Amino acid sequence: MRYHIKNINLAPDGLKKIEWAEKQMDVLRLIKKDFTKEKPLKGVRIAACLHVTSETANLMRTIKAGGAEVILCASNPLSTQDGTAAALVKYFQIPVFAIKGEDKKTYYKHLNIALDLKPQITMDDGADLVSLLHSSRQNLVPNIWGGSEETTTGVIRLKSLEKNKVLKFPIIAVNDAKTKHFFDNRYGTGQSTIDGIIRATNVLLAGKKMVICGYGWCGRGLAMRARGMGANVIVTEVDPIRAIEALMDGYGVMPIGAAALVGDIFVTVTGDINVIRREHFLKMKDGAILANTGHFDVEIDLKNLKKITKKLREVRPYTEEHVLKNGRKIYVLAQGRLVNLASAEGHPASVMDMSFANQAMAAWYLAKNHEKLEKKVYPVPEDIDKNIAKLKLESMGVKIDVLTAEQKKYLSSWEIGT
Image (tube, rainbow, N blue to C red; front, side):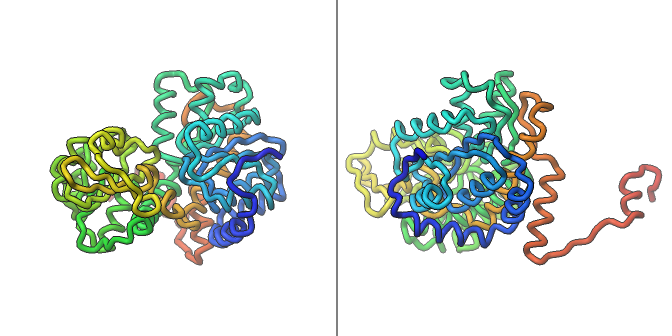
């Protein structure tokens, strides 16, 4: 079995983390049990480009239990847990191509090795596999039944392909499932981003002015958790509806140019490029901390930051000090990459349980229905989404009401009014 990881001897530690995560992934565990019995993915080749974490390991085990031949590479050069990668290779015979800190050349080499499997289904977090299949690896497209996409940024890229009528196979937008973005993006990103910032810096958040760029579901979750830690939260937005929502939720709202003057900690979570730029760096306080929790390392304009930096050093792991030409110091976390995965461990397993339950079921749905699907971006079917929520509630010991026959009739009729 081919693989490329940091060190196979890290496997025992990785196995412990995989087993710990599995205990908190009740829904995925139930799906794995069904997959083991029914083998709905028997013989299906699946290439996965995801963050190589203990939670992802349990998704890979589930997919393999369903009968699939699977290969895994990293979706971000800094998000790999090297012990997890080693454990997947040693104990579960799953080929992994991922090393934390790998350079760009190695990253793309790994992507291409994953595609050498000639997959029928892709699993993406950021759409890098699909992007390669639409550019340099188009010869493999005839093999593809479809793919699934984990994150907002990836879905945006894929919908752009569809809009321009160049999408070559169907995609299931796992990110858009209610059991994914309502929970993973809000509760997962909120908690894990705070975790990453604290691990990287050990700063006290209480009393700090935290500027959050973007008020989508991830931004909402981060703002909620930051306020809970005692931070004074300021939101920057370009969307007037989201801006007024942030205002009504009790946060300060202002342009990034104004926020740059007062912020202590800045976090980008927009999915767009150069959100914090040269003119903003020059306005910032001495000691300002910058982090990104969007998928790609493009939201902080690091190229221009380096141009106005006269001295650069690493003062803590994944914390770089930029001494600017004006004498002020700015601290950049995780090289501008996903701070929650580069400086911490990413989302809690119980949150990823629902996200990866959607991924597993999306693979099953594609294997079963790919011949009927068009070259479009599809939502996760509502019955799958609701069933995952139901299973999660049951695993938590929570019961809810069901509609009576009379209530169902009332909701489906137009005759009954006041």
